[in-house]
Image (cartoon, rainbow, N blue to C red; front, side, top):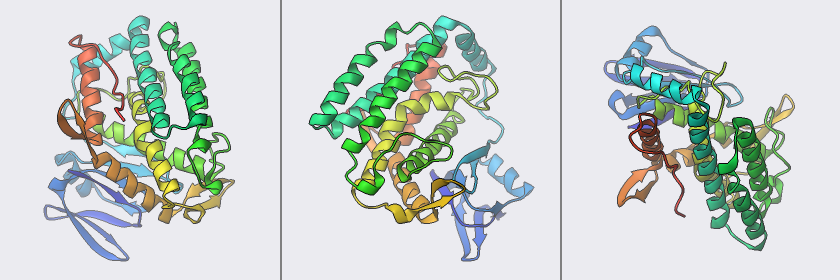
Length: 325
């Protein structure tokens, strides 16, 4: 099963038992049995028959706007939906102590993977920042509220971002501080685009479990549509998104010509998105050895969700994934 990324404008429809995307370049056919999720970046039209077809085959549609920002998903009726699991998730959210335990796990996993990324590129300058971050990680367990935990996480992330220029060796792509909406530099555009993809990838994997994406623990479950995917993404953003960004820049596979300036912000253009999506998809399909078994990063995300399920039902305490390299 694979993810499909559509950047061109056109129509996606059903032809027999096959998905067909028709654009000005002609028709492309994909067997429905080989597709897991479809990411739509172009102006794509579809009809009810198509929605019925992909629902029958449990295919998820993700929609992005002109700038590449995620705007929503079409999730077929949840075939793994579990009332029992929703109740247990809500119990863990409403109980402050139980919620804090899970929130700390997400912050710890994310922070340790940030450190792992820096250690991969380690030099004298990075070593000092790694030591600073490691000292702050020790404070996670003593945090006594979600607010204090979020503040500590933000502080650790600020240290992490301050190390980016010790890794990036292309002057035009250097970091000048995190600026999100709109991104004000090529690197900010890469981070925003990549993080958005990560949130969507985790959301797609949650759909394949009994968990409800609307109930998160680190990120407050309020008027946001989904929060659990934001929590779990903290663990995987450093090893999937940030490593991809450093590779694309330092190998000179992406440069300033892959961005455009619009409405006061800097965004990846179509050429840049194609490059990023190719690398992102390759990373999701890349296999690593976990407990003597080879698994892709995409399956690793789902395994993480299964671990969270076991924690919530009281079967086994959750321990976040920490990269081994």
